[in-house]
View 1: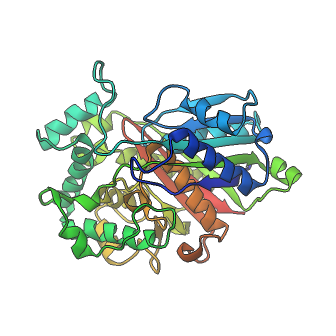
View 2: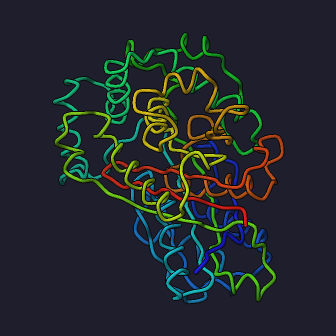
Length: 392
């Protein structure tokens, strides 16, 4: 059964302390998605709510503001891939025939500073990953997320000779894209030199702009069946052509490779499932929103998605194949690095951007002739969700 994205909504992301409360943000994203689809909340049969930093049933708090109609509401926490996991479940509900119109909403009200463990009186879900990371890169006072992705970038540098300037180029590219996006938090353009000369947080490995900051925000999507869209006269421009979610195998912890610790295998397996299901290859994709929580992860993900060969990411960047005029436009929204990364909202913000691209409504960010769009959303601990959208 074909599943369609009938409506999307996203609010401008904001720095911690500068946003509305999570329930107001979530409600606004839902309202925008319903307006975009041109239907009322009474049409929604199920809802999946993605978030990380919130108490149980925060999804109900958000969805109830849009309507209390007694529908099933499922709260989804899959770390940074929570939003796209909500989308994955919404798509499954429609594709299975259990529902015709399902809401996926993601939101996050974050605190400033590096991510940390909330419940310190019990085992951390990432405990084994933390231990492996400490063994591979040594003990330091850096926050764990920096150790993860900085360590993966360092491994790539040591293995392939990748230069720090290449990561800076990725960050500069993100700023150029974000300058065209009114929903992005950070819209000031940065040069490679600006990124290189910024505060160093890991000498020789990372400067501060290479790490995405915590932000607050919300986004939503309405997933519907083809028959529902036809019956109600909804926009049927964008369908989900294929989608896959993967979790870790033993290799993530046993490989002795930081690139694998941060989910490279999850990405490879998920995208391969998507390519096989859709009968396409990476060369067929026009525009991509990928999980650039760090510039280092964007570079690693180029290879994981098959955009270039193993060890070829630096050439890919230097050739300009990751931006307008190259082979692929990656993160036209500005990505997590510039748009911001409110964890539960990120996957659905990616869906919003790619839906606008395929509808040819992305204005200054429009990728000319975009017909196939690829989304990659990663959460450590772990899950990766890859979605292929098609202009119908």
